[in-house]
Image (cartoon, rainbow, N blue to C red; front, side):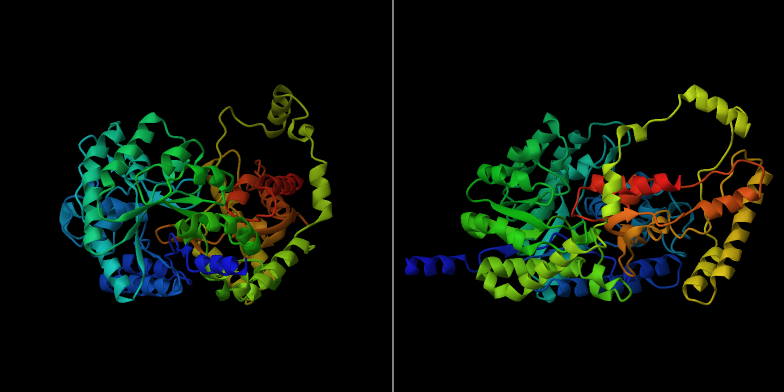
Length: 608
């Protein structure tokens, strides 16, 4: 028996591949954002922008040292879907006559124009209609929607991907090129003439085959091909499109890892498992329950990559719990098991260590992109060499999780009691519409079609300067109040001049429609550098919802009361709703999102 045990341990060593699906491209201090905006303003050159991109890529690959496979091609100057459109030669007709640098044409599609001075070429090269932008599945990242017509044809230009591959290899990176798959690319695009997008598949697949064959000639072994549309509901035609596509691509000389994320495969599990590819990645954060049946569906020679670290939230992973679940799978699959984050780390901030002002206790519970890669390395070492090899790391992880679980800042009995008292009756009006309408009409005396605005006025340079001075301590509370009240009065007077019927106060005092409320609610924390890319150079810094939510005091009443005192016309109270606050936050993962949303709803209800 001892001999058998030793043999088993020996066989388990060095068998689980660890890899990453994508890395945040903006830089830990938003270096890409500032470089892009400098270039667009004409303050820096194209070469300087490209050099900054190369430095970021080099740094990001260094950050991923120790992984068995590292993504290449996940860096973008604006959007990975737009990169794919340019790689496939799918440019909107309105930009096809551009005579300048391709990067400037790329920015014209993304935002309607490029840098100052690059568009002075007459009618061919000026500003154009920017591409449509929409959310990347259910994330807060936005992509440029591919445009199709029945006449769309595709031609390969893989130069940018090949340049990045060459850079990575020069740096000694174990490269895994990452591309968006053909079916997802068609699915997320828009046919401008109502053509059937699937009719374009026959024209698209030869270009994908050419790309994969090109990568094969470059010595690439594995290619990650992202097909997140597999977790959506697919009709028979789109299911058949997957079979058609991957039958066409199966003999291109590279091993394909089809990556799904953001949801559960459900009825598409059999389809995904049996595609003629070398491996399948699944989001085990969202689809853990589906993994056992998926393993049974997989052919015996296919790799299964499990996304066991949450790529969309910022909490530390329960490493012991992951090992408890994954170790039996590793024994069963052997070197066919890979592990990774659930999706690209594009959706989380870069480095927790840059946070110097974040609450220390809350910080100890978090993991940004670099820390998630550390967790991945720990899991990989444990699976290869046993838990004793990472004993200290597992103990530290458990201590942080235990502290969070037991923290009174996370668990507020009064909030839980308030939630328990919620009844269906609280969501019902106390009177019928006819009764309410009559009272409102008598009170407000509005015309038949009253005019109003949605809410916020522009945050002027004066407002931003006053807020900056206040936060820096150079402007006291009284001075800040005076400055904001002056801006509110200006907004009220402007609306009165315009003859609007129902006014708003302009929200001068609010730094952000979510952060403003989070700063006044117990259960929230705020980072200094927790930026994530929303689109292009636009970055957001989601507040961190770490505990039970309560409202210690009024959040908007004083400002709205002051605004109403300035006018005889009705003044609207402006509140951000609980669902929006929830979805624009990093939300705690130790209770259902619905529970956190209900707590937010109760806080907003109190404000009403």
